[in-house]
Length: 391
Image (tube, rainbow, N blue to C red):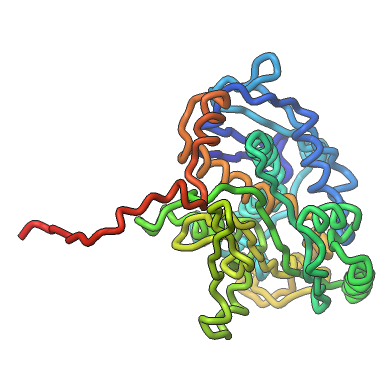
């Protein structure tokens, strides 16, 4: 499965094509619109979200409310386009640090920096969320749930109650406009963002994205590019402003001894294998263990700041301060559904690869017959053997 997006921040439309979705999945625009609306809400958002009211249009790949197996074509109108359509746009020749302005010009030879800005804009993530919504719908057919929440904004971080289930965290986060599951910490995050606004500055943060009920055995250890944890990390940092990702508490684990990190295995009276901890974040050897998949993602502060930064005017060669472009003060809460979407896509792709099948109906019996972490599925020869490599 793969997807492509097209479109610019102030162009007429944003478009996505999703290829490889099986036939027979019930899908309508309203389901996708619910996810798009989540992306547009969050304390610290900028003025653009007061203009746009994203609504998906499905123009291919769905008939009578069901996917056909053909590529899906999805598009969203940019309402702000009408404000730019007949506008004479002043030249932009001073690159802003932290954006693709300068690197885009070096890469493609642009003679106008706004061309890089338009495609590099996080407005593109609208279509990632739309694609992710379709993938979430497929995963739901197999009981797989994707959710996320904010655990840090600026210098404020949360210590979550371990008694809270992941589902409870998801629900509590959606009730908060900073998407933090803990109300007391959410108030501190509010104040952190408010102070950044006063200072005309921006904030980043850390987000946890979790996949529940993923069967064991997705991914592979046999090639570097088939390790599913590697694919998830790559997908997370492919999102605008995401500069790091870890599976589980990876960086915390790096400071511990092995005996404190690895997840012990036990067996119950029914022959089912269990783990009392999930420090590995749902993976061993690039393969899912059946435990929750947990990715922690670090988002840098948005690069568009109201304070001027030092730069150089490429047209004159002189030092010059940057000018402000409309943006968020803190986009971390709004990034949660985007990262969920990327997680959903990677896991949906892995599930389709594992199960095969051109239709959802074909996938269900194959899913039910997957090997699980139980002794009855893991028959051992339990005898001596030799490698037997040819001489």
